[in-house]
Image (cartoon, rainbow, N blue to C red):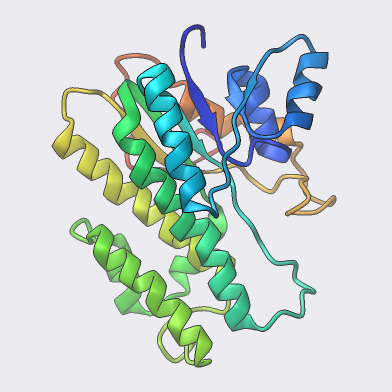
Length: 263
């Protein structure tokens, strides 16, 4: 990673911190910086809150001015309500999709133009997204799997889910009862859309963009019973982030255990 710049969202703990430990470049969270410094590593700290559009634009301007762009972007930040959480489903839908889809999309909107030739973009999604897709109505499945779905259409579908949840009509509208799953269905689909756009608009830059599932990992979000450690969860994201120069695939795929999965 010498002389390369990597940005990892949600890098202050869990899978994100494990990814940063491999990159040794930069991430969010001063305590995490101290943790890595104690291990002899020297990441740099830059404040970035994906829930705050101003924070995203400020960070994007910083990386553009200081480094001329970014070599690796890992969108790892995400949230999930606990199973026992008593928040109404419509609240869970709105809050979860805001972070996992809409705010992550804002990151991509402002950082994709900064990705340098040969760069790598990894969106940390989940197998729950593909499982959720299979439980959507045939109409929704067809659109999410379509190669002509646009980003605007996808944004509309994500908002449609939130709006339907507020009316308690999401099931009638063809959606399953999982805000987290729908958010990750959207993120994986967004990854495929943006990969196609990169291939069309920057065909010679050899940028690879993929979504991935890190697996069920022992984090604050997933709980202590998960089988994987954060370091094990970092394996697939790191694999995609460090695909060698000249590689042409995977691109626009959903990857788990370093293998392309059927979508």
